[in-house]
Length: 445
Image 1 (cartoon, one colour):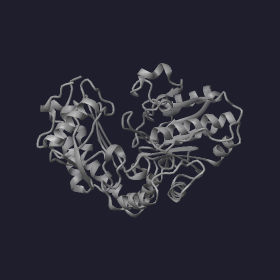
Image 2 (cartoon, rainbow, N blue to C red):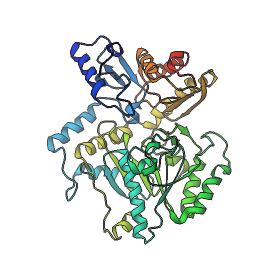
Image 3 (spheres, rainbow, N blue to C red):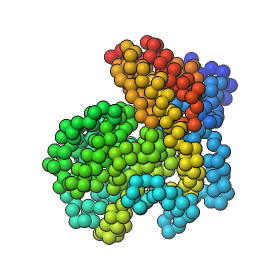
């Protein structure tokens, strides 16, 4: 396959240029085509909130590397935790063996998460943590001699990952996985919540959801939802009373409640966990992304004693799941250091400052002719355009302005590292305002 050198960044040496040529021809990036791949930018280093490209640009990261880098890049304490643990051992199997980093991490997670979540299952990605939660639900009801409770209820516009069970609870039309629909689990989808976070609440928003619980509860094992913020399904922020109603319905109809806090957990929305906005505790919670501050891939699924004990007393006598790299000591050690930094850095103040600036600088863009909606919650800022972005053009324009922002569809959003200062956040917000005036950055509908 030929490579168009004009699409590659300038100011690189021959070796770096050859690396990018190979990348374009052979390395498959997420949600991209190998026939007509989008350009990739070669990273040379990263420090604090900055991503430094081989071509010389220094970019303020507005994405936290897909929402995971809380404390910035190349953090000395996280580096030290990684090196210190690697001097002892980098990995041991978690079957029959255990270690202090995992024990300490699980202890901290039980302390931090909503009440009642006392059992921790570690895994190595957010999608797998969702798989684990769904398997827990199914095995729980099997152990209760109710195998007929084998379906999952969720809401439209949701996103829970790219593995098979996770895909089966993503939006069936707009969830990026329609191709696999014929072979996915057949689950139940209620309408997405429509009342926004700051709007006046009305009980009519849960009428159809309530009807689905009433009709199907005998076959529903669990209800899964992203609390307060629907992420990759549209960056939609809904009313806390909706989530509270979900908890009430699960209790009323004897259905397990799973909250997917992979994107929202550990402070991003202004609460340590987004389900705290509704003052509810789920039966199962999924965590990932931010656990290690963006250093290592790690996830966790926490559940109640009732779920864990019932599964363990069931026919199998154990939970039927066991990842090879479960409880990886390097990842757990870094996660412990990251959670310690989160506490010390007064994340509430960091997010409060970020939210104030996002509201001041992003919300007024609602008056732009190219903008359909703007919304802000905690450290999340979203501009919904009236047209789809031209990814290649808009990405290039952002890089030229010294920022890294990765839109999708009609959504231009940022979730910066918590340590982002006011000057850096203003640069990000101003860049979004500027691209809205650039016709080349959008596709006409």
